Image (tube, rainbow, N blue to C red; front, side):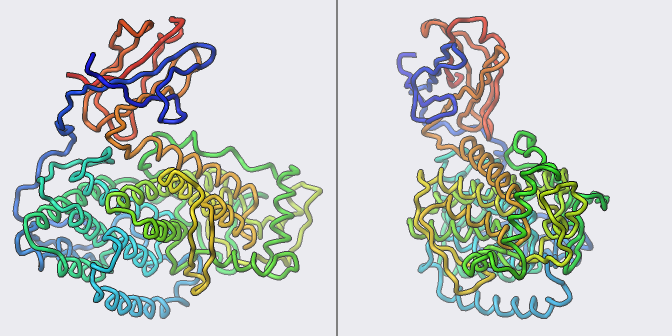
Length: 599
């Protein structure tokens, strides 16, 4: 062990610390070691097998589908579009095509067609500029994904899932070549000369064409624009081939994730229970989303908040009276700026949706900070993962507690048993409430999760940036803090009359916990591994969290004197880390741990 070097270890605090820590009055020193003679042997991560056949069948889609063989990536790649031969007449699994949120579909159909035509020609003009003037291809394909969300008016829940699939596929494709960080799901063998940029393009193309088949021509155009400016050769071909394979694996891994499952929603007219709200009285949106498989969280329960305040409590009365004063359609309390803030962050139909709004913010910051391709791959993967799991946790809370919206609460305040609230049957909200329960706020949850990821990624909350809005074109809001921006987004829902303050507060707390958890445990830098943490010490046991290079086998060893070490656990590192419960920790007055690569 003389040649081993000490790696960072901590008990959940600063990853820079490698000193012993004290928990519950016992001294538990953490030191992890790594073999110095680790000469680049790649981790054996599944799947390693390459797709060897020259043709394959397209993936199945929900609805009637035409099946055709399509070629693998070849030297004649300029005219190859892997998914262009698949056109389904039905909806794909999990696809909420044509969903209006919350506006009337029939009334907006002509506007939809007009926007699609306008966006198409705007995109053609944009693509004619060429990729050489763009920041990097990840920002290009992210922008295209947001345009697809706008045109398809994808729901907030489904859009978060789609963005996570897109960006994890891009990340794993790029990282399979660079291997600078932990993989998320798939680390394939990559030729030494494969292009990370080409891999990102192929992965993005395949995912977007699969998730939005009716908008595949947009992906075709962006893909062709990239190929027109790319240098032909093995690096390009190998990168495209790798990105395609990773995208297929990523899509298949989410094929049965519960996003297309239907569950019955049983309405109730009891006080406090959610009711359809005016003016559209739309049915509940994605009540099943709490059952969707998470991307990262091993269990959603630690992140789901407790119930909202009781209807007869003072906290409830304060919150109701606040939104009643600030969020009415006609009132003298809300300022002109607060009205603008409400609309600016509304993110209803034909917008990028709340998750996409933060993708635009992240793209703006990434451009101003001149991020590399690898940095953007990791940043957008982390943020998308946090948003996707935030949606699952938030929607679980919404339909678990099923709390009514402020407009129902105010109009039926005589039923809440609270002497501090007063019924106003004529009260109307400033914005139309979305078609799902109030508690907790999705905007607040998405925003704080996104802000936390950005804060951890850049190492500071104090970032100067601007935000634009699909709902208020031409209006720009400036910020010098990510947290301040998230706070404004949360308050916008009170100004709009569609959320209580406790919806906002609990949503932000939940989003913060999710953002913190995902950035602390996923896509970690390989040069900082292995990493060993004491997660908790309770009930006379130590709960340890182990991180390493994905697929590499490690030994967890324990010692009472830092001289004699005894192996107590062995396993291969996985994405998100391993948890080990040391039930023998309490039997020793002092215990040390280290993590060693197995021979």
